[in-house]
Image (cartoon, rainbow, N blue to C red; front, side):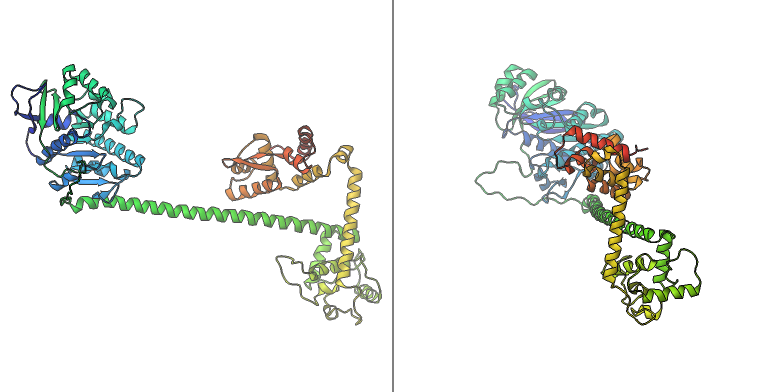
Length: 599
């Protein structure tokens, strides 16, 4: 770094508020410039950006570090003469950066003394630009505390970040912090604005040096009058381009000065009719860019990985939903199978009073598998001779014996012959012992009895006989249940009894989940499952919750929560012709009968 103590940026000029000796050099102490607080203002076209560029050029000529916050994309012209790193949000920059690059940008600026243009004008998303600037300012302040190296941060259009009116965002708060506390760490700041009336006065009044270019708006000239004097408030309206009133703490006077013209390409000049040719700009070291590119590559890799994980999560969630549906379908099939089995068992128990239903089912399975002889009608043990005699009598009888175990076998085989898939769709072989309704003898497997005569009754007739017997048993059971029911049950509508029966048929944990919703109101399936004694497993919780939802006992109420709706269900299934009080009364009766409180 050069040992220059002052830089020359302007000459004194004549005119109102000027000095008696125009043409004198105007110098700025480098330490005051790098570590202090400055403010440059003036209306558009008055020369304020030229003044800022002159200050930047003089610092770069002497090897001092700085970071320029470019809000209009007008400072890249410095690259015509200087190797300065231009970072931002589009391809015009040396490299595109995001908030993740903030730490490295601050490190390059302070630790490696790399001059940087932070071009926030190239970001389409203003929030993204503000987040980047906020983080860069934080990193600069943090590193300056440790580095203790004079460094200047130059901020264009500072009224957008530190406004006089309205709330101030995180960027403004950080810039104010640098203005108040940065000096003791060696970190200086210069704010540039075309509207001094819109800049927070707390910042302006704390500045060590101020430059006032031409201003014509009444609110802005009033600021000049309050800070300088009323005579300058009038004179500031007539300043020429590049001319300004300069007030500094070290000179302790206001001087009328003419700033020098910048030496590099004026990228911020207002376009005219004449064509202009963009000069060849200097490139920065590939090593600097590669360090930032590494961060970009790591960020891209992270984003790609996050995208992959999200896609995997979506797939797994979809699979979970499919499995929950399959699980519920399987339970529905299981329930249907259990109802059918109960009906057949009821028929067997009625037809064989001396034999339990389980014994009958076991012997029938053994018979079909060729592991046992068909059961005799007798309830006690029989000798082989008696079994042969019984078989002979059955062959000569003209009517099928529907009271024997063979009757159940006929019904079972007829059910299989009609195409109903048992045990996951295993095939029924024509001519098997079950389809013949006899034992495992060769004659029986061919559909004939031992005497060579065809068996009495077809499989269809056997099925009809079995189903008729089942219906008769069910009718008798219903009659008995009706006889035992009390008057209040008889008075209740059938739909209410149906709902009560459906709740009673629920598995214990599912019913306890319903009780949880009743007692606690809206809740998540995971909480309900855990309260019901479950492990809180997501798949199990949502599978049981789906059973409740499909039956209409709970409903989704938003944010992943479900709520209890038994009274509403009673009214819906009663075709809505009962009032809320009656529906609530019926719901209360159902709850007392089948719904126990959750633990």
